[in-house]
Image (cartoon, helix red, strand yellow):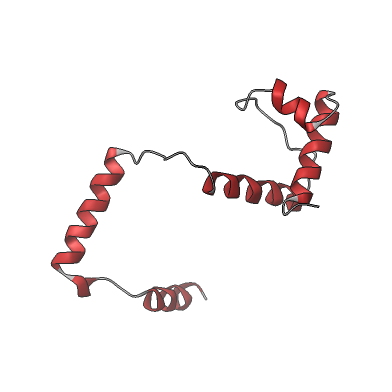
Amino acid sequence: MSEFGLADAITRRYHSEEKGYESAHQREEIMPASMDYSFDGLSVEDKFALVERLLDEIANADEELAVPSWQAEELARRKTAHLANPSAGSSWDEVKERIIQRHG
């Protein structure tokens, strides 16, 4: 079984049976990527396995995603603020400690 064996098996079984296709390969050739899927028949664990596989595929994709201009502007603003006053921020350990103190 591949690294994503469970997710592969679930995807093949669920969608092949639901749509009446003989194999996952046939389904992928026929169904557009934008097709709306229903995952109501899957357990939460199986849904997480599919989400993990999807995120891994996105992370490994060769295509570049465009950063929206508002996000690039916000990143530039934050970088400028940090460079102007590097000690103004909090370390991750400090942030975690505040969260633990506030929320347990």
